[in-house]
Image (tube, rainbow, N blue to C red; front, side, top):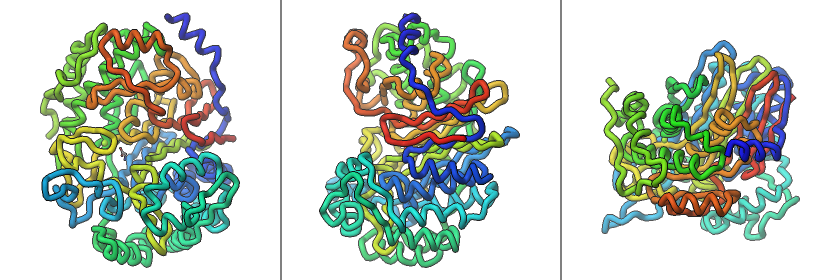
Length: 548
Ligand code: GLY
């Protein structure tokens, strides 16, 4: 089996290599914007601000002003910070707001004005810049104004992505006018000009986050919300704050993993699954083998059961972070795995960790010439969010309210079954799966990683990290390798294309219910190894790694 793993490595695709700095993003124009900032002496935070605004123009399915996310930074001297600028529930939000008179879930948590949480992106990027940026704010926002005003040439990927969401966006006049070209689809090589968005960005370049949350942008957003039955008010916008949190950390085979704390469920998932794997010897079966897939899938299944019950906004719910990562608890999870048989999810309930305590998206990874690193994942949740482009402002709104348990115990749009802890409440943050992560080895920066992909972000990031650490793959090879996903409920092991029929048969023999899936996350990552930066963008998307 080990020999087979080596044979696979012969086909390895080389990552993009550079010596000084690297940006990997899910869209090429945005990656180029970030690279330009770095070449001009900007630091990783400067580049992150510029890429974040550029993606709001060039990757409208996920890049945003109308959503939120997480920024993880590690400075060359080892300091870290985590900025939570995730959307929060408006003050008028209610626990049962997405249930009809019979108590059934409606589509309002995913489509239309009422699905939006209070956007956090502009506040989050400004907070990062005010603390750590070195270049003038306006200079970093300006490239996005230009991209919106002058337009971008529509790529095949963008044309296809917009077509895929035509039925969603066709329901809302501004989205139909701008992104569906009034009903005549944008084809490859057409031009997408976003004039209203350019004006909004120009005001933000001049007035900063205050403009978005208290200025003309806030006034228009609140007016349009009211007109269309949305919940977000001027007060909600004015009160929105990004939160600095301490990242959670853990170790795997001598590497330190620095990752996302709650309200993300991603970091805990990554660390718990690594803990379950370490010392199990699962990797000896070889990358892609049925035995290795089985063991990891069983770890995934168990974590997602824990996630359903124990994870939520820590401001509202006591998340047993240390309990879920306690070596005795993790060892119990490991021992509950039968290496030869899948445990049906119906037999798995969330564990009882000890009481030690007094969550379409996009990701980019950046390393600057000083060795500072940023992993930033942000989102409007589903592709093109709730489908609404705000009239006069030109940006799409999120449908992040669906990341709450709109009806605890019932699945959301990612099929995730979530508990009471994640029920809707005013000013609460919905649980996330976003997993921006930075790994060090011997105290030195080793990997910057993250991904979009809803509930599959956690398992996607975990597998790519394991492909490097356990299977010796380069960054590109680790991303290219086929991936799989299990999230407890539904009880299915979902496989991407690329696993052999023999492997699938062996997994079925172990009792797994196999399902096929197009993609388990879209990972954008950088590896620092042997004096080189290895930048790798995921072929499941259409991004770019750019370095110098
Ligand atoms: N909206 C996807 C996530 O935050 O998990």
